[in-house]
Image (tube, rainbow, N blue to C red; front, top):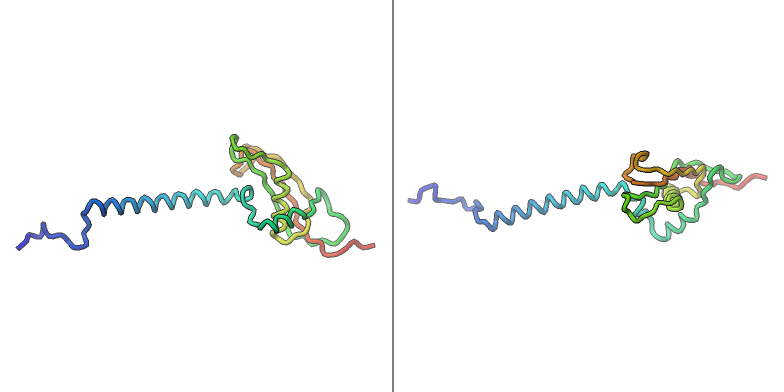
Length: 154
């Protein structure tokens, strides 16, 4: 009869290659979890890199009129506030912030909510000390998305 100490359970894995395989599997899972968390953090900066609109929609959004004050005479329905951001992430980032880029993002935000104009637009430059965002420098434009519902009355 064979002593119990020498009998191995058939499912017991003592082979070195199996242990190595499972260790690699765990490391891959950790790496995937880390990369997923890293990419999820990038979602906060999506306005700079990806607008979420097709090329045709971006072209339509670029046609939305932007008014620094009140729009021309007519009947407008207020949709709500919108914001556009031009963000330079670090001091060595080659991307240069500009009011034009922030306005483009403002137009895209208004287009996404169904507006056909943006009114009361105001833009402000911010640096890291002023901004709660992860931007080294930024220009943030805010406005009100509106939809023209009628013509001016004579």
